[in-house]
Length: 163
Image (cartoon, rainbow, N blue to C red; front, side, top):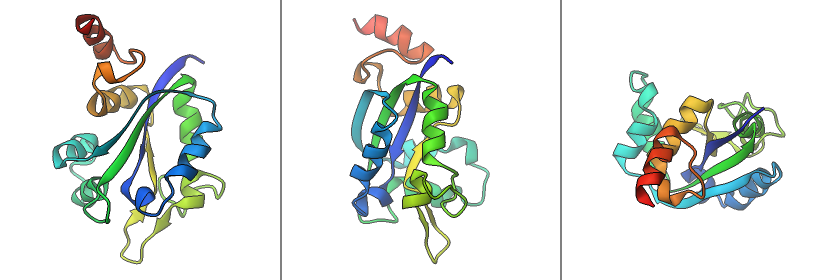
């Protein structure tokens, strides 16, 4: 397995419920390097770009609003870029299935996620699903100079220009 980067977002529902520390603590167990971290107030444009691959789905607007925090008291997301051996697979295993009701109970989503009576799925975190998605998402959420190392092809080129 190769070293790679992955994006993790702690979503507004987790922050509102005071779960950020629990999520970070679980992520630290993986012993991956944090090469980028920041709190973000998510714009509609960023949320739509993040979920662009789901644009044609009937739930698109709801998940955009969910990521923006318009469905919660907080509009903040905490974004991390984690780096290490098989980072994507290891983080995905730890976060669990997207639907908290289908996630393993020891996973982050299984232990901390929930389904609201309205049908809204609050799954606490986002984690990139593969290298291609990780590169696209990292470039959406982070500028190259905000990362401790270049992690994407476009970031590598930009890093050299920024020096």
